[in-house]
Length: 80
Image 1 (cartoon, rainbow, N blue to C red):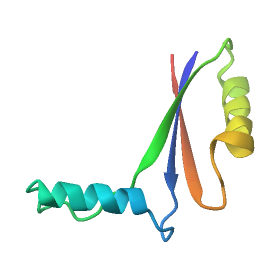
Image 2: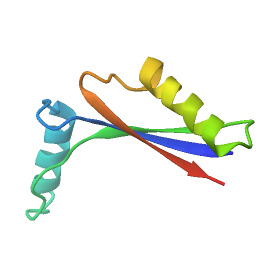
Image 3: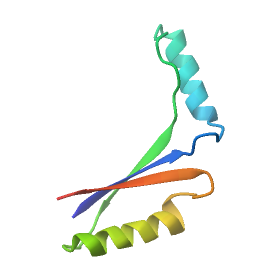
Image 4: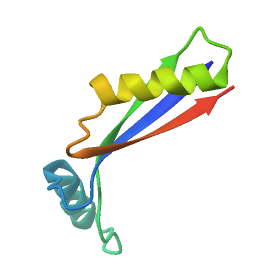
């Protein structure tokens, strides 16, 4: 089973990389871009067939290592 975990900064947390990307896009002529939030994508291949056990393990991984819950949110997506 494959999983994808998207991690992004919470609203209100300063995002200097997102700001730099936003400014670069504006300099390239993309004036209609209002805001950019930068994050990360983590893909995990699990040797698990039970969806509930997979989600439970991925949640634990995310909360212990993959996302800093003080400043980041995460979203888990399973791909069969």
